Image (cartoon, rainbow, N blue to C red; front, side, top):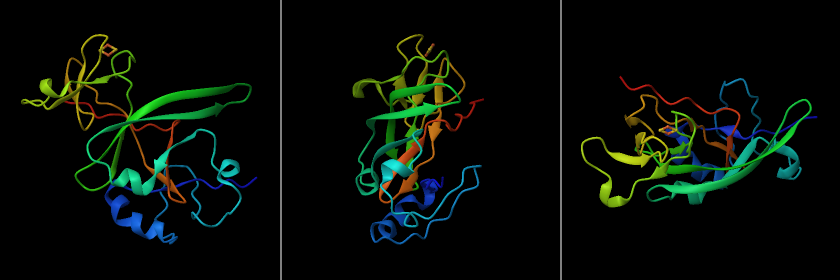
Length: 181
Ligand code: FES
């Protein structure tokens, strides 16, 4: 069975491409991550039959690219392996980065896996640009997901994948956070 997967779009190209997508033009460049990408308009069966269940929809491309600040987006997806079907409910933190692309951060602390929380506004800033803190053992991260205290590994992130005006993430393919020196 053919599956149409969302196209991969680089953070740099995200905003500049969004207008073309809105007009139905499929001028995006497919990525080379091992997944197989089709053009967004090649298959016209309903999206629910096309998008693999481990791709989580985050929302409309136009709305996300107009974001101000950081927002928390909940998602649902399903992971199938040989014998087990596992529903997944979680969330990500999404913002528009300095280059105009989407920054999609995992909320999972890189110490032992607790979920991080945004730091109250009055306690942010300062020399390390604190933005998130883990309630378990105090790991700290900035608004780009970089580790700024307690742990050295930054938050995982996700590539923005676009199909017919919707943004998806592949929950099975997080991008490891960088290690600070
Ligand atoms: S699990 Fe987050 S600091 Fe330990």
